Length: 121
Image 1 (tube, helix red, strand yellow):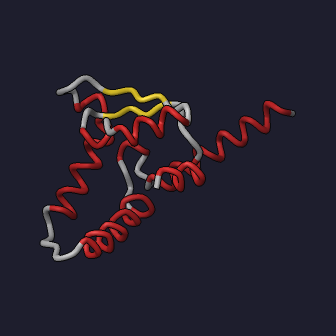
Image 2: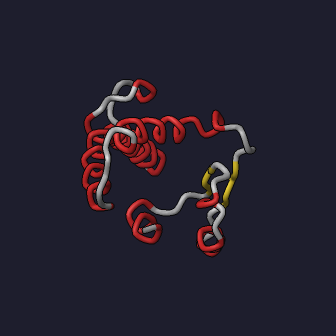
C-alpha cells in the first residue's frame, strides 16, 4: 500500500507520527529509511501536536467504527470507502476555508504550479 501511495503522491521528506506500535514496526521504519523518509515522533501524551490526525481518527471512529456492528472486514471496507469519499470530496472543513480537502488540495497544487511557472519565466 505504501508503494502504491508513493507512486501516486510521491514521497514526503518526513512523516510526523504518534507513538503507536503500528508506526514503530520494523517493516515500516525500514521502508521509510530505505526511501529517505524521516520519521518524526511526537512526544508521548501530546496528541495536540498531531491534532489534524487526531480529529480525523475521532471522526472516523465516531461515524463508522462506533456507529455500526460489523460481521466482516469487507463491510468495514465498503462503509469506509463511502465515508472517505464524503469526507474528502464533499464535506466542507472549517480549517480549510469551508471546502472539502480534495478541493483545497487542488487549489494548493494550482497555486504551486502557477508560482513555479511564474518563477521559470
